[in-house]
Amino acid sequence: MATNIDEVQILHEFIESKFLELYSCIPAKITSVDKLSVGLVNVEPTINTRRSDGSTIEFAEYLEIPLSVYSANGGLAKITMPVKVGDTVTLLYSQRDTEQYLAGDMSKVYDSEALRVMGEYPVVAIPCSYTEGKPIEVDPDNVVLQNDKILTTMTPEGDQTTENETVKVEYLNSGDVTITNGDCTIEIKAGGDTSVVTSGKVDVQADGNITATSGGNIEATATGNLEATAASATVTAATITLEGNVTVTGTLNVGGATTAAAITGAAIVGSTVGTAAGADMDTTKAIFNSHTHVSNGSGNPTDPALPQI
Image (tube, rainbow, N blue to C red; front, top):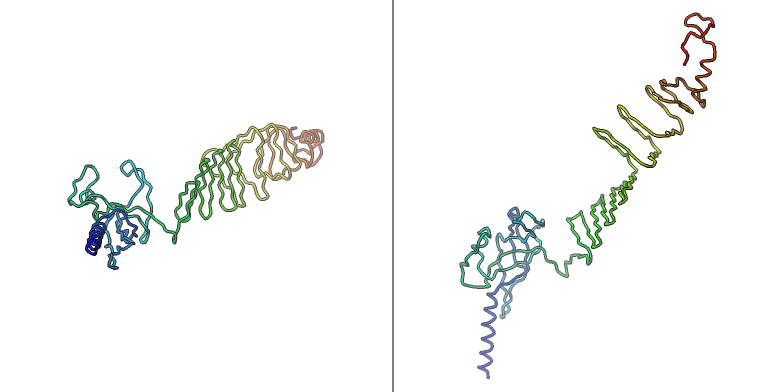
C-alpha cells in the first residue's frame, strides 16, 4: 500500500509540474508606458506561483506587450484608454508561440517557432481589472463615459448628459436641450421656444445682418441698459410703443404723425417738426402756423416771414 501511495504522490507531482508550464491568463500591472504611442506596454504579473514545497516563483517583467484597444476598420475607428504605470490589466497568453505574429502586421497566417503549446507566450494586456478591495462603480442601467473630471451618461430612454466641474449639457429624447454654466442657463425646447437666463451680459456680434422675426411679440426687459448699435436699423411694426423717457442722439426721421410724451436731444425731420411735452404733434403744427412771427432781422412783428409747416 505504501508503494501505491508513493506512486499516487509521484503522479500528482508530475501533473502539477506540467500544469506549471501551462499559461492561460493572469492579473498584472503596467510597469512602463514608454511605447504607448505605438500601443505597447511593459507588464508584470501580480500573482506569484506557489509550489508544493512551500516556495514561490515570481514572474519576470514582460516587455512590449500589445495593449488591447477597442477598434475596427484597421484602427481608424477606436476607443483608447490613457493607461498609466500601476494600472491593472488582464494578461492573456496564446496557445501557440507569438514571436512571428507580434513582429508582423497581421496581414497573413504566421508559423509557430516553438513546438510547445500553451507556453509562456503573452499576447495582449486588457485594461483594466479591479478587485473588491479597490472597486469601480458600474451603473446598472446607463452607459457611462468618463475621463477624470468630465462625465457623459446615456440612458436607454435616449437622454444624454455631459458635465464637468462648471458646465452641464443635457440632450433629451424629447428634443429639449439645456446648457447650464454657473448662473447662465440656455433652454431650447423641442417646439422651438428658446430662453436665455443669465446674471451676466448677453453680447451678440455679427459682421452681417442680425434679424429678429416673430409672428408674436418680441419682448426685451432689462433692469440695466439695453443697447442696440448699428449703422442703420429698421423697425417695422403696426404699432411701436415706447414707455418712459426716450433719448435720441442725432437726427430722428419720422415718416408719419408722432405722439410723444417727451423726446429730447434731437431735431425731428419729416411731417412733424418740434415737440411739446404731452402735446399731439399736429396740434403743435396748427398753433405754429396760426400765430404772427417776427420778420427776419426787423425786430418788429409783421406777417409771417418763415415758411409754414
